[in-house]
Amino acid sequence: MEKIKILIADDEPDILDFLKYNLEKEGYSVFTALDGEQALQVAKKELPDLIILDIMMPKLDGVEVCRMIRNDNTIKNTLVAFLTARSEDYSQIAGFEVGADDYITKPIRPRVFVARVKALLKRKGVEQVVEDIIQVGDLIIDNSKRIVKVKNKIIQLPKKEFEFLVLLASKPGRVFTRDEIYSKIWGDEVVVSERTLDVYIRKIREKIGESFIKTVKGVGYKLDF
Amino acid sequence: MEKIKILIADDEPDILDFLKYNLEKEGYSVFTALDGEQALQVAKKELPDLIILDIMMPKLDGVEVCRMIRNDNTIKNTLVAFLTARSEDYSQIAGFEVGADDYITKPIRPRVFVARVKALLKRKGVEQVVEDIIQVGDLIIDNSKRIVKVKNKIIQLPKKEFEFLVLLASKPGRVFTRDEIYSKIWGDEVVVSERTLDVYIRKIREKIGESFIKTVKGVGYKLDF
DNA sequence: CATTTTTTTAATAAAAAATTAACATATTAT
DNA sequence: ATAATATGTTAATTTTTTATTAAAAAAATG
Image (cartoon, rainbow over all chains, first blue to last red):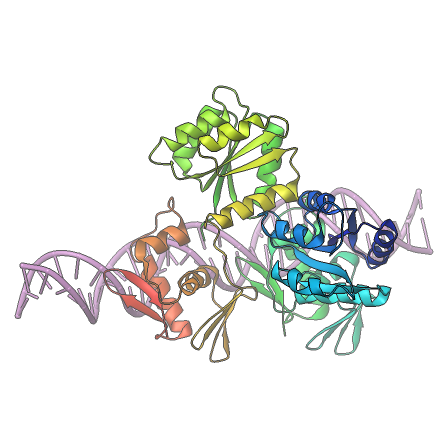
């Protein structure tokens, strides 16, 4: 599953490394920039999901970068958060005016920072929040134990079948197209035959019961109860 | 629903395949041409929504092809984007002079490329941005779950019926002519019989109730409450 | 390296959806 | 009112998509 990309721009390398370290630990893919110009350049190249900008930066300040982001068609919809010293709160106003999505105040406390980023990504629907334990009706999927329970009966699924079920369960009710499933489970390089998916569906249904996975003909599948 | 059509012209088959693959993955219908002449020919035949032209091509270069597109009444309003090596930026000027809508520079990075194409289509109003949840009176259409709710009763519609309803619901109150519906749902190549549309109307009305879809005789249909 | 488990393919069956055809009914203009 | 035109309805047919089963291939396990 592809990682969420975050770009951080700050002129202090220490802070940059510190933030990068903390975000990577959480499984994000992190890019960095030391000034506004570089930030814009990297943003256009990498198309991150979130850009975190220090307000005070050489060449182009954060607010200015944000304005330029909003005016660039390829990246205008990217989430932008500002980093700001608590004192310089005048910037809050200017920041939201140019379309910032969040503010994070310095000094930065790692756990708070990470929580903030997560919350923002979740709020905006970027983060695929794969809960550790997912429950859909009588079906419980325990991600860390890699176990599925149906009415308290424990079922072990092979790797692919489990991944498949987790994918559907990550957004119960939402329909996943066949293409989407192939792309997410097998990746875009691997090509498997047209019917492989159906066979997996059959196997999972045999094990967890027929009722959970619903076929949406012509479109895909969804998990429901 | 008919796919958005994109024509790509480039003399390097590898690049062509690469771009085609990435765009098809996004759900576009992609045509290709290996030189300018072929591009023009395919364009007139397929009437794509967007034509992406490499500047440097044998027989007819991109700029020349674009000029001819703009002089051809059947395709003069088609969107045109140029592919260009970053160095040869002199062409930018020539390109915009003949009426290019966008520039995409090589080397091409798949996500950036796709984002760019999407942005262009959206900007020019080609891409149908369908809201995830549409509500019209007591009728709720949930696109990601592909369900319809009428007074909290969940109704599943088959693919075409669902697409049809989404089309009407995309602009509640607006009348869609029969021709428009045929063209948007079936596309311009496919020819279905005169009464097919009526059959769909009947089926949808049976399922969601008679009152939502209003016939505007001599014109078409609209969704209202 | 032999055995078991998992993944994938292939062939066929079944189901559902899309379309047509034939006929019915309603609306509009003359 | 009546022909002409447009839309409605139903059932049958065709086409498309998914389900199922068994068996082969690949990977993992001891």
